[in-house]
Image 1 (cartoon, protein in one colour):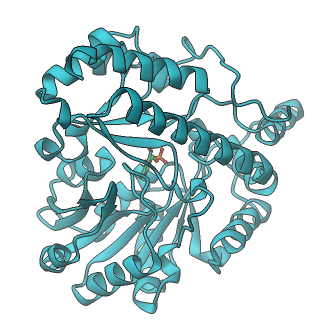
Image 2 (cartoon, rainbow, N blue to C red):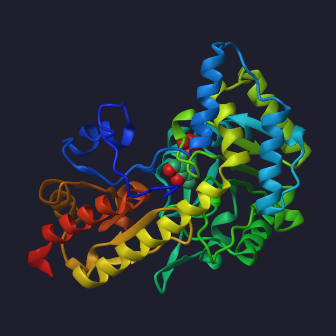
Length: 391
Ligand SMILES: Cc1ncc(COP(=O)(O)O)c(C=O)c1O
């Protein structure tokens, strides 16, 4: 088989955040790691080959993102999302979280309000707070097992905000926002003077039968009032290369952001950030298609297992990426007890819902299913066993 996603590799002892940093978060490190959004699959061979070739050359001096690298980014954005990015509208960024922190610092000041849709990827909650901005939450509605934006609430909350952090697609839950959703977000934000930061890190993992829409393409409101972040990091499982890109079509926003980066003497990334990203974008397509098929099967496996063996647990199944949002509230246990059983009985590490927006998400946990099916099966069996007495 050309791509064998069933193969299990030992990753402990490789300074992996997912595998080797459980102790500070869970108090123990003997857990099956189903938390950090990093998959237990090797990066595509094309990426590893490109890195090996550069190592063989032997020179690891100062390196910049050249025309070939940016050409691969531009081509990828156009082929997949009809984004017509120009070279001067793009900037290398090491990580999207850092890129968003720079946005907060460049476009807002302490006390300014920043809008997010909760539950959301924890740094979206933490970045505004850690930068002394006021966090404003527009809670997503769970409708038939899928998140929807509460636009009436968004209308109210957008007033007085300076920025909105949009996870497009959404993490957690993997919701792929429709073009109509994004057009409404764009219109409300433009009308209220709210700059939209569209984090599209999960876009390339949009699963078959769903279609990702890149924010800037949905309307003039979106095009002239947004910063979009993209990255090959989730897509090709190469987060350790620290390789992302900011795309800013509107000149005044771009000038402010790029001037902020220049004033911070922030210019180039590490050599492998460019080499790995370019190889992935140029040659990783086939690997990605097979990966998505495997993820679809993992999601179906988990869904079936949960329905059969843990009928009181409800899952939001992703339309993009590999993160399940699980609601354990039907079991009637307090969050602390759920967490305790997951850690001490199941011996499985899941992300606590509380970190995705506070107490509203007690009883929720996020599970990463980007792993060989045998690991997924074991994790699910252990979780079912840990709650066997409350079925
Ligand atoms: C929505 C979202 N944005 C950003 C990141 C991380 O981005 P980076 O590693 O580039 O900072 C993640 C990782 O899980 C994510 O889910």
